[in-house]
Length: 343
Image (spheres, rainbow, N blue to C red):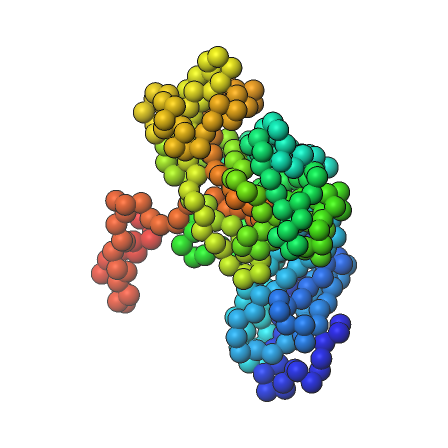
């Protein structure tokens, strides 16, 4: 729809096709499919069977955007040759979790946003966002500040269809681990007119920028060692790439004392002193909230976030340091050595 036929070149024309699903694996119809920054190619919608296809010029890399009211958008980048049919891997669109939590902007006390609990074969977890006292937010489009925000959450990496649910494909060196999004319900929060969509949380700086970091907590459901960094990146939908951010850290509630959580931040088995916690940006108010939310012995990922956007806790993907390459397979007939893959 709304394509400019004059911009489609016969010698280059190619087709894209794919399928969009909901999280339960059923086909999702009515999803708008378009090419980022290419209005001349128009757009299409998925059919009742979730399938879609469209024509465009080959000869480059394009980013396909998927969006539907009530779902978080997704993007996939594909390389296109001239006069070629290209299949895009299945895409799963994710619905937000719950109705959201209203928080006051620039409040005189700390605030907490909690997601619903998620369970799958990897374990059980619940995302928690700690908003420090006096945290002020502004719409990046016009610099206005809302009185309150309805904050919602969604985890992408849930169940067997988690990889297909990601907001975008990961870089080749990054392992699929955990990704979620924290965003603002635009209609409920009274947007300053920034995103043009139902949810706020796109772009390298986000449509909503905080003047100080908020803090994301998640149970250490994958069992990473206490004290290790949590590598973090955010997805920039405008540039269609992942942007590295400051590392988080795996911490442990060493004990609860005087209404505050004592934290082991280096895996030593001992509670960190006030100076170490201060260097990490952990104050008494945050420790009090941790004491209310968790118990002694709980292990958590602690990650500061400067804005709302898709966030990926992106441990790198590589063989173990002591791994050895398998022997070269002998392709002589008959082989002199057994197939190493069969041993």
